[in-house]
Structure formats: C-alpha cells, structure tokens
Length: 248
Image (tube, rainbow, N blue to C red; front, top):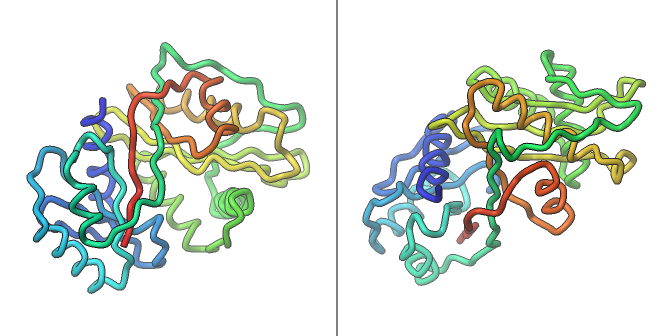
C-alpha cells in the first residue's frame, strides 16, 4: 500500500499548473501562491537518489522562488531522509496515513439543521473555502482558492460543503482526482460554532461515499491530532503507513 499511495502522490503532483521533473523528484507548484503546503516535491518510488539530486532539487526550488520542501511515504525512499538532513533540511512532522475501503466505510448522520452539498457555483466554492480557511486559522485566498477548487472538480476531484439553513457554510472538505483508483481526502474543516456535533465525521463519511460511488477503490488521508484521528476512525479509516514532511 505504501508504494501505491506514493505513486498516487507523484501522479497528483504532475497535474499541478507548473510541474518540475528534477532527476528522481517531481515538484508540483502553484503560480498564484508561494505557500509551502501547496508547493512541494516528492520522490518517484524506487528511483535511486544521490546527494547531487538533492542539490539539484534545492536549486530548482530557489530558481522558482519557492521554499525547498518534500512530502512522501517514508518507506518509498528509505535513504532519502538522511540525504536531506545532511543538506540542511529539518523534519516538520511525521504522520500516519489512514485508508478506507467501501467495506470499512461507516455512514454518519448529518447534524440537524445542516445539509451537505457539492459546491457547483463559484459563490458556493467561495463560501466553502472561506469556511475551511477560518477553521484552520488561515487567511482566505479569495479567487485563487475558488479557482483551485474548480480546477480540481473539473479533473475529477470532489468537494463537499456543509450549509446551515441560513445559507452560511459551516465547513467542508475535498478529495483529489483519482490516481490508480485512489483519492486523497484533505482539508476537512468545520467552523468553531458548528463543532462537537459530529459534522466533521458526517462530511468525511459522505465525501468518501461519493468517491466510492464514482469508482474509487481506496480513500486515504492523514490525521494531525487525536481529535481528527478519532473522527476518521469512527467512519472507517484505518492506520496503514507513515509519511514525512521535511523542508529547508
């Protein structure tokens, strides 16, 4: 499963607006933001990697005006971390990833007074991205965020928003376009006023159900804390492997 997840990560990076192929690395860049979380590289599974390759990667990121940064499944390049540390990189985080299959998925009720819907217009996409940005304590990027959601949906990705009766967006989540039958679920965020009601679980479960209904075999995601970990396990995600985030 580790190699399959890593291959899907690399394939998704190759769909970015700007792609750099740097020896054994693939970097996906976003021209409208220099956020390191949207501009990073990942190794091609099984490709040999040398210190010279790491130096070339750093140079390519510097030339693009981006912070050198990688995300990858640890076992897919077991010697890479040492090379990166030698070059001055610092580990940001290590997370377990979790997977869900149609057999393990558990439905979750939508809290009363809320409804789930795929945003099909730019105003709805804007409402969702603003809500999720607020949930994560991040600045909303406006049209740039809306355009990213729209492009992802056009490529086969799925977005799901939660709306209150007033029309206010309470939160949402997205899933990447399919690669080798897999999609990554990410950005599950709920505004403070709507938390602790099971909404994050309901959004995650319904988004994952939509993925399976559209032919995905496996959904995967990462949990950054105990609270989100419990949410994902409740709806059928199972810890499977480890990923690393590392930057210069």
